[in-house]
Length: 231
Ligand SMILES: O=C1O[C@H](COP(=O)(O)O)[C@@H](O)[C@H](O)[C@H]1O
Image (cartoon, rainbow, N blue to C red; front, side, top):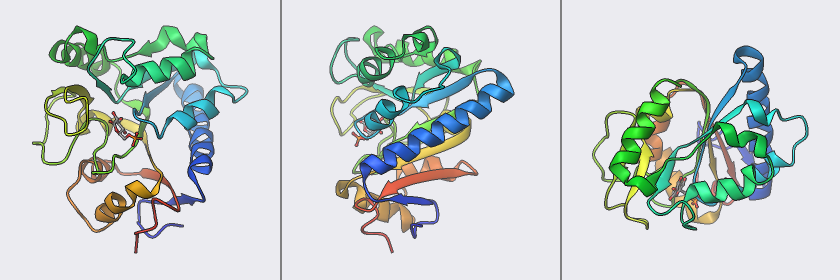
């Protein structure tokens, strides 16, 4: 058990976090499909979740044709830009599990971030609530493309300008959209995240803490390295 109240599952390393997160997601998927006939999953960007996705596609008994895959945020660029979160998801998930492709909803930043944000808001409005939103956390406490020192956004999806982490222009689901979900799972690994995780524990006003505070039951999986500065 980790001492951050919300960090309720601590594992030895990033590989164990990925395995546990994949098991958790698969369990929630089974329950959602039994209850509602489909599983609506919002995928996190960045590098941390890639090992989770690799674990998921290798799992037997997953009904990929019933999985509906959304993105929590996207970086601007062409669809095949290596910086795009969607490209990694397509290469890891859809290349292995093509039956999920018909229910795959990337944020199309190639059409421009304002238009893409408007388009994605219209798409998800009719799909809420999600079944599970998966989030990572950056070294500055950002999550999705919600960065510190930005005004609290309204609506469901926003264009982001001047992000401190490249690329500067992005599209992000807002806190209101990210918490419109039955389950919220946050994964945090590595020593480079330790300071931000400790700041969250101490009550700092970070995007990750703002989002987590809006959901009643947040699950956080972290590894020992990320938890190393917690009290
Ligand atoms: O830019 C982003 O960063 C965060 C954290 O990424 P990671 O590589 O440190 O895991 C990620 O959660 C977000 O979706 C992404 O666009």
